[in-house]
Image (tube, one colour):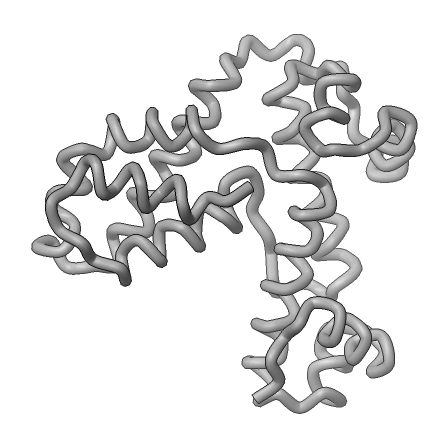
Length: 198
């Protein structure tokens, strides 16, 4: 899923100004927060578990509790998704009873994330986007695809580890202790996720 290109195209169409900083912030926030929230204050394993529960609950909400459809959205084999859901003690039947319109659910998420992102900028830079926010949210939500399980997990791990490294002045030993992870595992993840260590 390439949210950045969707955001750029939509903002170009709906606004006259070309503010790359605003676009970049909206894109990165949508990329990371579109379907999930993360508590980065917890140890890695617990934060990862909570993240996956949030992600899969949202996928199930968008799929109205249908495991086959949820597996397709997450790009997982149905049996694999079933195992993960059972391990995380998620009850998919709850989502079958919810009267959720997937497109409206997605649009509301997009709208909220963009609105919260715009709050970080002065009024002059974002007034035009605020004016067209409803239209922008509709178009973006219609043009983005689902985030796969692997993509979501990679986004989480990269965001979590980068933040932990920054908070510990890029000291590997202190970061590993802080997030309750072995140094060896941390080095391996830094390498796999192409994380720059300042």
